[in-house]
Structure formats: structure tokens, C-alpha cells
Image (cartoon, rainbow, N blue to C red):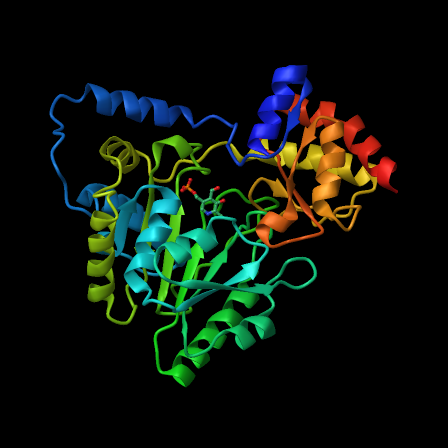
Amino acid sequence: MFEAGAALKATHGADKVFDFTLGNPNVPPPDSFKQALAEVAQDREIDHAYMPNAGYPETRQAVAAQVAAEQGCPVSGEDIIMTCGAAGGLNVVLKAILNPGETVVVSAPFFVEYRFYIENHGGQMVTVPSLEGFDLDLDALSAAIDENTRAVLINSPNNPTGVVYAHDTIVRLTELLAEKSRAHDRYIYLITDEPYRDIVYDDIAVPGIFDKYPDSIVVTSYSKTLSLPGERIGFIAVNPAANCRQDLLAAMVFTNRVLGFVNAPALMQRVLARMPAERVNIGEYAKKRAALCGILSDCGYDFVKPAGAFYLFPKSPLPDDVAFVRQLQQELILAVPGSGFGGPGYFRLAFCVDDQTIENAADGFKRAIDAVK
Ligand code: PLP
């Protein structure tokens, strides 16, 4: 898609192509970020030495306070490991917990990279379909968890669907995991990948997991909530009540080191310690969501309004989502087929784009659906 997009832009001009393919945030980081960055850069006292592999204590402390507020239970700096984004964090966790051949259960549709991350560390991804509307199918999850399962990995707010799992769903999932852990006499981890936690609409809140299930791990980053994906900064938070907590943390500090990251970027850690609770202007994404939802619904597309993140996952008007994405391409609209996310029959639109891109794509969206009706 990336290459097809580049070719179309070269032929027609970038402003004539409506590129909804990439989850690259276009809302700028808050001013406080630029200010903290300038302050850190001018601080002659800071050193550039090796640091504890888990990160600077003051950064971990500041992040822990943020996580404690989100999870509704005490979390200390020791429970936090700073990472190279959420991608780095997921790899660190998976390398630490997986034995060869063990499975990680994921609800489809899912973030494309999960399979590669899991297979990087000798694991196997088991996917289960979600319910209509993309909620977790707890019966399907239950059937997929067996004596070989090491973790269930969820993502809320979800990429690609924008769904946020409700409190009640999370409670029932954690009850299921507790029951399965007992039945199979092993720790089955609940990993929540939540880089979009703060990008939510209509006052929806993302429920915590630490107060519901001990063997739980949060992985996240500031890639989306501070619009810093190129800076590669994120963290892992381990539930203070986790079984073998010290071993788990030690394993992750070790895997962070031997996967070659050694530690998360120093400059960003220093900046974050000064502004852990800041966020981009979510109102900007809310406006874009409203505009795109309005256009798609006027055209007759069928979709679930996203509760969070900056993606829409409409039903493809053709059963073959790749064919419909080609149809959109004829209108110079670039989207990603749902099949790549384990969601055939759908396509993904990332609305972290200029307002004009959304507005000017309206006619093309209409022509594309009319052409296949
Ligand atoms: N998880 C999900 C669901 C994502 O959408 C992304 C990036 O798009 C990542 C993880 C990776 O995030 P990061 O850039 O912080 O590594």
C-alpha cells in the first residue's frame, strides 16, 4: 500500500491523493513537550552515561504515578520498565514469558505486527473471531485457551476497529483467565497493549486490569498520545500483585538488554519525567472522526463508530476487501484491506490526516460505493 501510494502521489501530486493508510499521528505534540525538550537539551548537568536497563528511576517513578491513577491501585517505579515504544515493549514481554511452542491468544481483527512479534520469540499466535461489533467473544476465547497458552493479548482502544472493551467485558475476561489458570495449573498472562488509551471519545474510559487480575501486564507508548512515534518511547507496567513479580521484572530487564535496545531513549525519558500526564489535543481527532463518520454514513457505508483510537473499520461493500480497496484507489483514496488484520470483508481508514484530506475524499468515497452497488 505504501508503495502504491507513493506511485499515485508521484503521478497525480500528493494533494490529489487521499492517503488513509498510516497510523502516523498528524496532531502535533503539546507545546509543553517542545518546552521540556528544550530545557533538557540546555541542561549542562545531565550525563550521557549508561543507565539502569529499566530506565531512569525518576522517569519510572513519574510513569508509575500515572499508571497507578489509571489502574486504580498502587504502582511503584520498580514495576515500570521504559521501552523503545510499544513494539519494543511487546517484544521484551514476549521474549521474557514465552517458552518455545507456547501460544498467545489474540482476538481478530488485530494489529498486524502481533504475529511477527510472537513468532520472534518461538511462540504461536492463536486467533479467535470477535463478536458482531468487534467486542471480545469470551466463549471463543475460552475454547482457544488450553494447557499450552501463555498469554492472552488484547488491544483497547483497538487498532483497526476503534473498539474500547467495556468494564464488564474485562471483568468477565479476567474471571475466565483466573479459571483457566487454575484448571491448567499455570500462569496465563493478560497483556493489554494500549498505546491509544487516552485517545477516546464521548467521555469513555478504558478500564484498568491490575485491580482485576494479578498476572497482568500493560504495554504502551507515547507514540500516539504525545504524537512521538519516531522517538521510540514507551513502557511496560507489571502488576505489583503478579505471581513471581521479581522474576518477571528481572526477566524483562534482561530481555530489554539482550534484544539490543539496552535501554529506552535517554533524552525522551528525561523529557517525560517532566511531563508524564500531558496529551495531544484529542479534540482534533474527535473532529476528524465526526467528519469522516458523517461522510461515510451519507454515502451508505456500514461501520461501527469508533469509541477510541483514530481508525475506522467499515464493512467492504464487496465481499472481497482487496477488490474494494482497488476500487477506492481508482478514486485516489488509499485504504488498507481488512484481511491483513485478520478481518476480511472490511477495510481500515486511519483518520489521523488533514481535515482537507477527509473533506476532499467525500466524492470519491461516494463514487466508489456507487460503482459496486
Ligand atoms: N500496538 C498497536 C495496537 C499499534 O497500533 C501500534 C502502532 O501503530 C503499536 C503497538 C506500536 O507502537 P509503537 O510505535 O509505540 O511501537
